[in-house]
Amino acid sequence: MYKKMSPLYSFVLLSLIGAGFGSFNCLNPGYDCKNRGLCDYFGRCKCAQGFQGYDCGLDSSTISSSANCRAKCLNKGICHSNTVCYCTDDFIGAQCEIPVLSAKCGLDTMKVQGYQPLTFRGDMYLKQSMFGCQLREMVSDIPGMRLFELEIPHRAITPCALTKTQNNETGDTIYEVEIATAHNKGFFSMSDTVHTVKCVYESRRMGENPVDVTQAMNPFKVSLLNDNNEPAQQIQRGDPYFFNVETSGKFPDMKGTRLSYLEAYAVDQQTGMVKSIKLIENECPVRSTITGYGVSISNEEYSRAGFFIGRGKIESFNVIDQEPIRLDYRAKICTGQCRQAVCNSPSPVRIPPETPFKHLMAPVDIV
Image 1: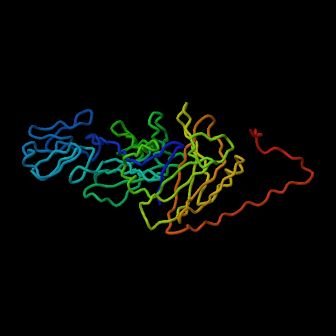
Image 2: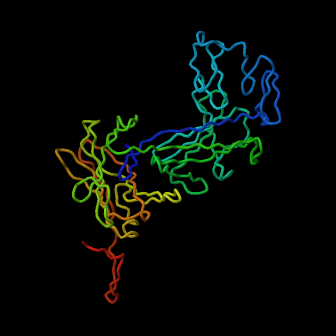
Image 3: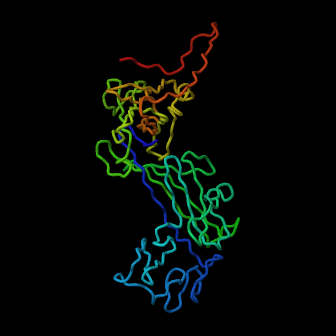
């Protein structure tokens, strides 16, 4: 299954951003200066002659020239002894390829990962809640380091919620959160740190052929049409629009598609806040949206030239007044016609005969 996020006029593609850490402070327990280095008032190591690095752990006489170095040191790592990388305090790994603090950006979640030395005896947590949103220790894949993780759904609620914003110039959607590291359990001191990690989902204009690794293997092709089967850029409130998803041809044996999830959302350009409304979930129209907004929603499928095309039909409404809507979707792909989920129909509303008719929604002018 593949997911894309799409405004009425753009695709959104997935990208990853990890934030730097800069976690070393020799005032904290377990962060000693090496090779006779001295810790100053600000928590920085003052190295003895012949040594360098954030912890004075690099013997300057062992630094290799580029001609002699056989190691590939990344992220400003320094090659020494011809085969070994000395990393900055932001990175670890044989080639300094692993951030000490990073975010892995999933389709629906952000997974925060942080590494600490074996001597670490504190806590890592989301800044907004020391005790309610702690990163949990996992089995580490790096010798000599402890691994802490927390997977946060994009729709997580307080106290462990992510901050969601949108870049008004690029259309990028950004999820971010501040991670605090306290080196003594239950206590945050002046030598502790707070850093931000974020995930950015990049926007591309439809028809620009965006260059992205996810695009090459995207099994779906999506389109937004009005009731005249024309590409939709503007839709009158109350008019239907159709969100079509079909196979892109990347997998020739796949002939059918069906929407499994569809969500409309909008960004308030004044405040940057995002409001979202589920339209289809688990292949079924969301009843609370239908009744709450007085609109019709259906999840359909039609055939064309031997292919089965998934289609969501939505009666348009505003998520935020005077703001364009965007659509976030998931779909499934099948070898033939996709099996339909069973959606429970709501019970009919019984109105007593003596009850006068009442308007359930604002009147609509027919022109």
